[in-house]
Amino acid sequence: MAEPLLALRNVETYYGPVLAIQGISLEVREASIVALLGSNGAGKSTVLKSISGFVEPQKGTIRFAGQDLPGHEPDAIVGLGLSHVPEEREVFPFLSVRENLLMGAFTRRDRDAVRADLERMYGLFPILRERLDQPALSLSGGEQQVLAIARALMASPKLLLLDEPSLGLSPRLVGEIFTVIRRINGESGTTILLVEQNAGKALEVAEYAYVIEVGRIVMEGSARDLADKPDIREFYLGLKEQGVRSVRRWKRKKLWR
Amino acid sequence: MQGLNDFGQMLLSGASIGCVYAIVALGFVLIYKASEVINFAQGDLMMLGAFLGYTFIGVLGMPFLVGVGLAMLCMGLVGAALDRVVLRPMVGQPVFAIVIITIGIGFVIRSVVIVTPGWGTETYTIAAPYAGGVSALGGVTVGNEHLAIIIAAIVLIAALYAFFRYTTLGLAMQATSQSQLAAYHVGIPVKTILSMIWAISAATAALVGVLLAPVTFVHVNMGFIGLKAFPAAVLGGFGSIPGAIVGGLIIGIVEALAGFYLPQGFKDVAAYVLLLVVLALRPQGLFGQTAAKKV
Ligand SMILES: Nc1ncnc2c1ncn2[C@@H]1O[C@H](COP(=O)(O)OP(=O)(O)O)[C@@H](O)[C@H]1O
Ligand SMILES: [Mg+2]
Image (cartoon, rainbow over all chains, first blue to last red; front, side, top):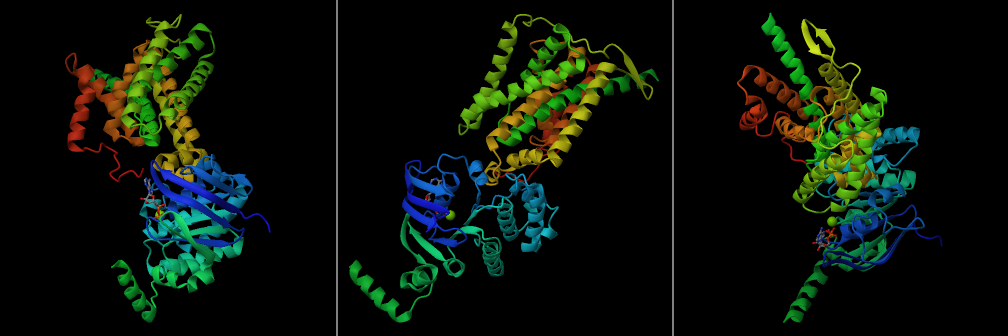
């Protein structure tokens, strides 16, 4: 089998003295969508920041497209074909939507292809075409999320890291975002590592998924298998089977005594 | 009629000095917007640029425009080197510490000028080909050295505007100033961009330094003009480029008029009095953006 596009081995990252993630090993095969699930504070964003060079892992290896990533500056990593849409979105507030998209293509020199990609973005996200000349600051939260994703795609990345793209969006927009994620992957074969708390939606689009809790990967498997596991159904999908649940409660209470 | 001519002359010569404040203030603002550092060495960079211009034109006998261009180029390199060698290693330190470092840079530049053979604490002038002549502008006679500053400032500002607005590199500088984090995320080499912004600030300061020479002479203390450019930047609303330009012009003009119509001594405090009045009425400055900057 071919080498995966992205492979992490035993990655360990600290914030000062605070251990955030430990022993993280994961793989993302070319042209796939892989989901990284976990609750708030589990360490999902730290995994992405370790990959894209915003924090330096203390231990472990990260290989992307045949290169070792740690030690590269974040801007150099974008040049290697890896774009990261952070949880905070971070659009350029006083640049127009169009200028934001052009900045997304900063690392590229193929001007004609960039122009074609601009048109492609307006096709994927019609809302952006309507707001072309408005400052990004004036967009709603959902529109800024769309802009941040489109801006990352303008770099024409091999791998796209998405950090909670559905966070804070209306249910309708969440649906649209996931449709777009599927399209990006389907139409141009862009590989995607998707971080989500919305496990239900993420498992619908992903092929494979990892579950992270307090900085460690506690479960992994094909999206379909994970979606059927009772733990996942209960803790991440909020689907609780009545009978099983009451038995468990009772057992737990007993354990706590 | 004579009174009107006097007033017109004061207005134009004030505007020309105002252009100098404006360009130095613009340098403050560019660096501040990109890195939140207030560069108190900005006036001394202008002074060093003027000494280089004097050396190229007055000592080595280069043609005036060549000397100006070369002084700008050299100062651009000095600005970039200062950022690379002194400021980049300070990233992550508290901003006030970095600001103090820039005050130190100013002292170092003045010391270097004083100990350099042929420079020292003497006063020099630069023989601009146009100096000494006058032009008539709508019935007002104005010294060519003042006119040259105004024209150069207009050309410079137009060029910078086009650069920031229409080139990818200029947009990337704006983008970096708005969010360094986002700039990294799209692959902009933020550190290199910061060095380039220092280069632009130092080179533009050198330009007005050389052009100011026929008006006020070249001297190691001419950098104290920064003390007027700083209120100009604050007056305009620190962080606003149009604000810095308008602020510089206003302070230059008010100063000239105060020097002419008011008793001795008012000229030097006029800038600060004006600043106090404006800030009392409009704390964010003339062009201040009230929207909080995202870091
Ligand atoms: N900049 C930081 N400084 C210190 N601790 C941090 C920082 N960012 C995150 N952490 C800590 O690291 C852990 C993992 O955070 P994060 O990766 O943001 O989790 P998630 O994205 O899954 O919500 C949390 O305990 C969080 O408090
Ligand atoms: Mg997070």
